[in-house]
Image 1 (cartoon, rainbow, N blue to C red):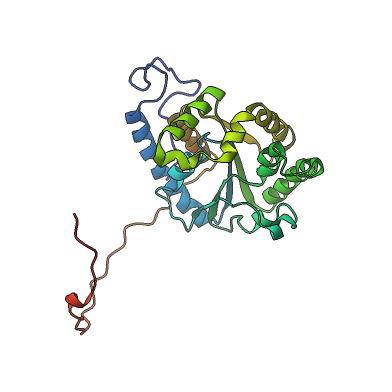
Image 2: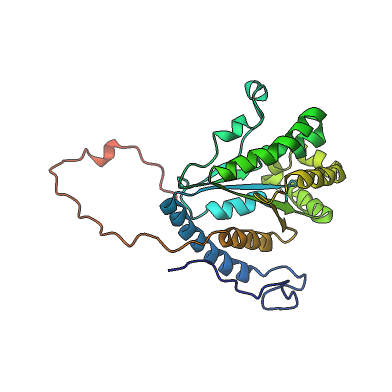
Length: 282
């Protein structure tokens, strides 16, 4: 049977005056978000089975400013799926050796094989955004990336890889609010890095970098999809709904299996008191 998600609201801009779905601020109510997220996560599991059964290679790139919500949507996508099928690639800073390689080389080994979906939490687009804005690459390296990247992605598509690119767009005021919230709470302060502070200061230059990136890399074989993310909950639902809509998948989930009986094998276990247990606090 077909398992593509059916939108729970009409196409077009949502009616923010609908008090059953939206708060007075225009943001999605948590009860609506929770119900819709549960439905979408069920569909993600069905999509996972379809990707496995069809041997699809799916690459999903998530980019955007700091605090734009990339990590949140990635977490929800992977929350109920198998890490053996849907995995995350979040590369650290390149090593000295990696910096001497062809720029795309260290990303290639993380690309999906048949039956896999790989979620890139930032990607090779570091070069045309963070690296260019912060001066971590030369102007020649930046220009070479803008020339090479579209061809690299066309090669991936021709080789049978589905490439989806999402840009999470957060406004200047909302970004400041999120940074301030992180700074005010000790348990979240680790999320506020030196790079975030620099990004806040260079907000306009990051806008220039994004616009230049789109100018060169928004190609028909792998277009950019912008996700407005001032409302984090709505952004997650919109992104996942769009991701699901890109596949004409069917429900190929396996039927329930018959659980076997435990075999009666002669065996005497060692005394329980010889084992060390954690304290029973609860």
